[in-house]
Image 1 (cartoon, helix red, strand yellow):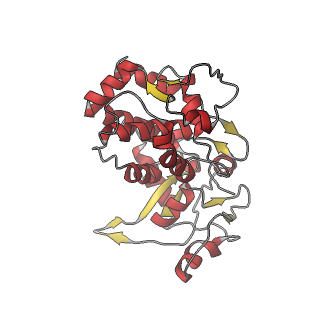
Image 2 (spheres, one colour; image 1 turned 90 degrees about the vertical axis):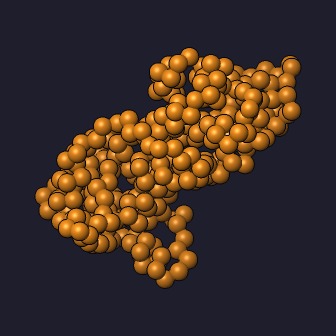
Length: 292
């Protein structure tokens, strides 16, 4: 299996999706965690024990799993990633399993149980830092926006030089910022540094990583804080009314946090010159990203 084969298999990975709670990103998080263990020298053999990564995977899912998390269930990706040829699991003799029912944590914690990459894939990732770097970047770009990519990199200590694999519409940012008068449409933040707009981003409503177009109607102008909050599902914008909603899961712990985020609930985005975000893109964000 060469690098192109691995990418082709990553593209085939099926994510569990449900209306109102969105896509589960547990499988790509598991792959990134396993790559980080190879990078740290904790995987000198192609055997990954669930008990060794359970806590780290649980925390990753809780923070970056892509939907409202009530139960992280790290056993699910450890088992069900074997629907792809890149991963398989070894279980104690006599234990039967199928794709219909997830193996229990007690079985996955058994000393005889472990997961492993397809051998040639493991060999490539183990021996070639460039392949690890490119695969990490590809997975991050495929499943998360840039704001969250950096958070995951920091969490897993995956500090490779970025190899950008997706082309972006260079005019998207200019058009979106101009449409919102170079101001955050939530708080009004606007600044210039060396004659260039500073601290404000053109954010995709329907994530670019999930096929959202780089069109004016799929973009809003946000300051760094509100861009992060929008992509993490702390806030969303309701279709038709353009009302801002703040997740009940967010708890401000000081006066500044209350004023910056918590008190936004029930207010409205503003400063639009011509084109408002389309309802279909806002609906996607409400259904797939917003945590409520």
